[in-house]
Length: 93
Image (cartoon, rainbow, N blue to C red; front, side):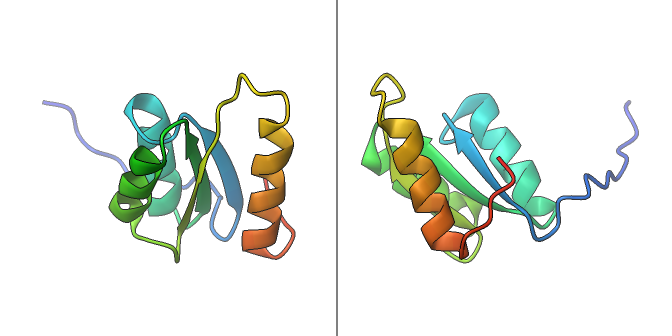
């Protein structure tokens, strides 16, 4: 049986953009960041998936969700702009 250890990622108060952050490894990464005190911006192609992930992560206090398709060349700039607007201008992407 594996012994659980606490980790300190030194991310408290920082903001991270997690693409594909509504399921699988992306959601797990976003969840860990939030548990460590960070705020996250999660994205996915489907708005309903984004809304569900934001709720699961703890709501708008700690998470912002943006529907975006990363195949769109303008998506990255839109995600960063949304993150900057939501967090007052700072991201640790």
